[in-house]
Image 1 (cartoon, helix red, strand yellow):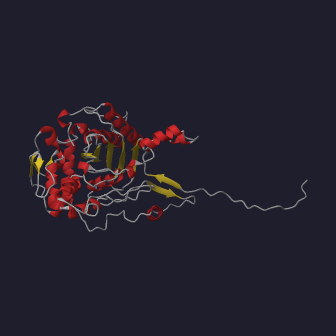
Image 2 (image 1 turned 120 degrees about the vertical axis):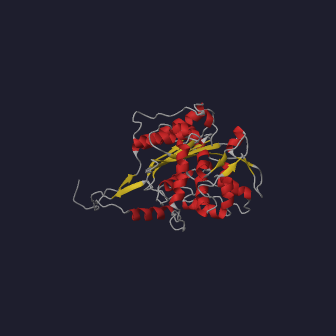
Image 3 (image 1 turned 45 degrees about the vertical axis):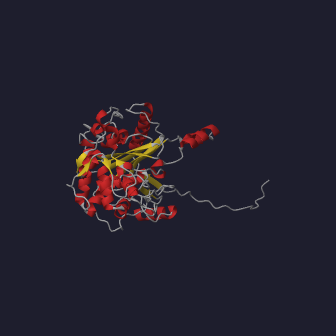
Length: 420
C-alpha cells in the first residue's frame, strides 16, 4: 500500500533533435554509377569486349568541377547493409573479407594512374618551357636515352611494330604516345615534375568527410632515393611509385577542366541544426579536419600558377581522345551529343606474366563549359578504352540524354582495341 513516501525524484525534458546532414550525392546518379560500374566489370569478365580479363572490382567518382562536390561515388564489389541486421554467417563474412567488400576503393584504393597522368607531364613540360604547343617529337616506337636502364617502347610498338611518328603535345595526348612523354619527362626532371602532381591534389588526402582516406604517393626522390633516368621515364607516364585514389584523380581532372582553380572536395552539402541554424562551411571543415587529423589537403599555397593557355592545350588533347578519329576513346563517344574531354590509361601492376592490368578512364564535360568530372578505375580491367563506357553512362544520366536506361556501348573499334 502506498503511504506517500518519496523514494526518488526524476527530471524530464523534451528530447532535442540532432542535426540533419545533407549530402552532395545525387541519388539517381549514384544508382546509375553503381550499375554502370558493375555492368562494365561483368562485361570485361564475360568477354563482351574484345579480350577477357578477370576484372576484380573498381571504383567510380563523379564530381562537380567547380565546387568539388561529390555527386556519386561507387566501390565494387559492394554489399547490402541489411545482411548485417540479424547477424552475418561465417561463410558470408569469409566471402566478403576475401573479396574486399569492406574497402571503399574510391578513397582507400591507391592505384598507379598510367597514362591518365600524362596531362601532368604535359603541363609541367609546357610551364617549364621544355616543350612548346607546336613542337613535334618523333616516335619510332622505341625510346632510349643516356643513362636509361633499358630500351623503352611505346605501347603501339608492341602490338603493331611501329610508332606514332611525329606528334605535338595535343596529338601525344590524343594517341597516348609514351615516347613523347618519356622525352618530355626527362627534359623536365622529377624535381620540377612532382610539384605539379601535388598542385593538382595528387599524393595527398582530399579532406573528404569520410574516415579511412589514404594519401597515395607521388613518385620522387623521397620514396626512391637512388633516382635514375629509368625511374624518371616510368614516372612521366604515370607508373613507378605513382599511386593515387580515384577521388584524388577526380579532383585532378576537375582542376584541369575548371581552369586550374583549387577545389575543396566534399560530400556534405549542408548541416541543419535543430534550432533552425546552419553550420558554416568553415565550421564543417574545421570539425572534419580535427576529427580526421587532416593537415595537408590544400594546393593553393605552393606558389604554382598555371598559364590558361597551357590548360587549354591540354584540354584540346583530351577532346581529341574522344573526338579525333585516332583518339583512344573515339568510338565510345561518337554521336554522344555532349563534347567530352577524356583520357584512357592502363598499367601493369607487376612484372610477372600474371600481373593485373588496371584500367582507367577520366573525363569531363561539357568541353566548353565544364560541369562534371568522372573517373573510373577497374582492377585488372585490361584496357582503359573498356572503362569509358562507365563514364559515358554516368554522363548520360547527368545530362539527361538517356532517360530510358543505361545504353552501354559494347561495340569494339578493332583499329583501337589495343589502345592504352
